[in-house]
Image (cartoon, rainbow, N blue to C red; front, side, top):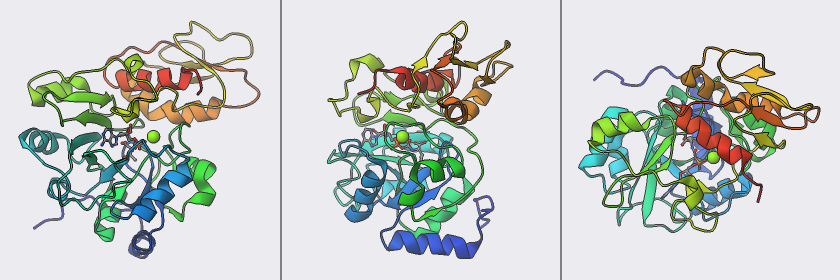
Length: 320
Ligand code: TXA
Ligand code: MG
């Protein structure tokens, strides 16, 4: 059989070292196609506890279990026909499926915040896949940043925000997609979009044959963990963020989209895919004390625009 995985740029001895560290309960930051993840053994409570501690993450917000194949996912969760169809079309890729926990599932209860569901995904990145295969168990991995802060899309971002808290950082270069995976809940009567992300609604609808339910974000509050991804303030730089700005006020940085002068421009040509790849790095670059705030030009909801606007609304939300 031919190897379905693309080559991994990390040397085998360093990968083995990372797998050993995970086997000892340690944490390894690694690249995925969306953002960098902070990985630990998803089957070991102490490793999962270390992830929550390193991020300063509230323990009611569950983690995604990363696996290398749909078969591996089916050992963790009830993997029904809808999940199989979506996995066949989108895995490896930026789609996370929330499914019912199997009664014999080895995933830590802390990783799922005690819910009877588990979020699973197969990342589309050669380093992530090689690491999961070398380790041989599912990796619990949230984005590798302090809870509530801007997600990391380079190894340098991880070092800046979690450097002293992570055993090893595997550098796979900048993340291709730049916003997190789409989170789709398949545990109910109809699929529910819990977080817009790298796979758009039209693509999901084409496989599902119906549009997933999209709860309005302002219906969620930080005290209702049913859709725990919908905490309102999140992805936030230190500076205040102002949306739908025509231009910058004095002192503000302007994050542009489309033609026109700006401090930095997500995509001068108005391409949402390019804008998603630039979003978190540019928010970080503008988050400097010589500005008073970050004003952001309007971005249409088309394509990855839905995920970008979701992240920007949370970045601009009142801080808790
Ligand atoms: O692209 C991604 O998904 C990245 C990379 C590293 O894979 N990971 C990521 O993880 O964004 P995190 O922890 O930052 O976001 C996971 C989201 C959260 O919104 C969490 O509430 C939700 O998935 N989630 C996890 N398990 C869940 C469950 N059982 N039910 C509902 N939502 C769940
Ligand atoms: Mg995150």
